[in-house]
Image (cartoon, rainbow, N blue to C red; front, side, top):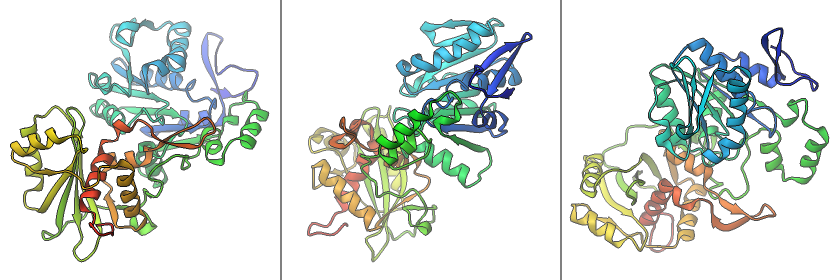
Length: 420
């Protein structure tokens, strides 16, 4: 490894040996001993080009087996991630062959594979026991927390390392489960941040143009690699820090048996979501204590799980489903559980009620509800060509926990005003 220079490529062969020309940010990531290393930087800062080099070293150190390379979607993967990978593994080092139909690179030794998976197809991540993983553009909206958790499951047996390379796009799991843990100095996490200009070939005048023309939040995220609250974030009032710091998070605590419990349910064959809230007596304060998201269960099985979950609680009611989902409520009632229709069907009115609860700090979330927290940080409106929020919610159908929360809050709303 030698220092970066505008006149030198990132990788080159000198005297029959592969040499890397890292800039300081890349060099720091290369030296990091952390199990989870994340480069969060400005665009064109040298993130994706670094990934194959790190993964090759990991394979060299850990030996034969399966490894993962994961992008947000297969089309995005083919634009930059895969070409960078094949440039090193196939063109430069001649280590094996790319199997396009099966999305893996097989080594000539017959014992080593790099399996390419998509965050939007989590099943592509569930088949391997991996010894290491590279996640590219893992900060994008399409790369959800469930995919990160799937990667962790694949790495668990070997306690493999992971490298993430991305620009920040939202305030979801990457900020909450990686960056914030690193800032709290939790063992195993390191985040390396640098601006686009850390890359010695990135034009300084292009960086200055972006600084002049872009909104501050967009420039800071896309050119400086810093987290900001993006335009269009719907629950901008949600603060993913602890109550003692002015936020909406609390550490789990034992709930007294007399506290009333309420449930929020979002129906779905493969994306059922449910939340449990406990109400503090003599106050309007609700604590979200449980979350669940999944599928593959029949209605009677869902009902059985929900009854087991609430057994022993001072449970009041479940609220859930859109106004049109009459049949689903009938099916649950037939299986032995009543799910009430929320009193207000309008989505924007429901969002307004949740915002009121956040602003009045009558809603808190157990920090173990990581899926709900991720959705809070990514639920946003689409932007128009001028970068201004529109009325349309981006990927609305994918935020099942927040739909369940909206039904729960509306179900607890007072008929004559007030939050609960």
